[in-house]
Image (cartoon, rainbow, N blue to C red):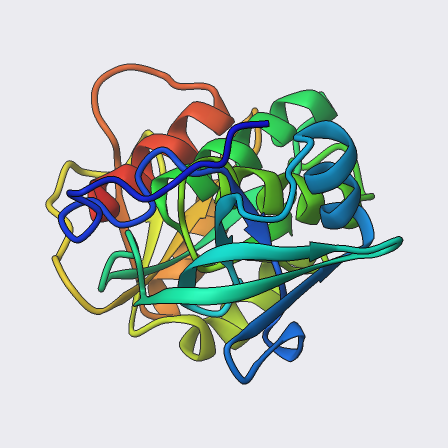
Length: 246
């Protein structure tokens, strides 16, 4: 395969056009990146990368790298760091998305993928009074978040938490963000604030109950609606996150 070399304008568009791979911080040391496991299989068997190729690498904790593959071994690729890009394509605004579980799991898959592309830092599957499923596929969703992080050229891997009840979320809300917002179609229209950290709370297909909204407001959340149209829960989650991040 022909090696991919950085273009002359890489300083303006770092890692533009390069395939992204993931290597956690412990696999990066002394200017050397080691890629193994599923990422190695994708690099060597799917993408057919060879020594001399230039790739993008994200550590999931806020740093991206341009790296040159120096060796492809039996179970690992070894790369040399060429350039480092802290917080590449990451927003200074930090958004945690708490979204109720949905009856159709594939729709929650879409929510995870698109919210990651937009730039959220964490996703909390939420159990509310009107939530029908009480189980979650957090392992699968974490893998989807990883794929979406690489596809969108991000360097922060969102954490997919274990499900929380609505009561537990409100109890811990202050630990997730400085500002908390519950989106509800019956709430008044309002404006969101820019900057800082935000917890965005989205209900299930049937929406939040009036009691849940009241309890959220009592616990420091601002109730707000997205607009005049009724949205699917996954659409509302993506649109709400986009208000802060795009």
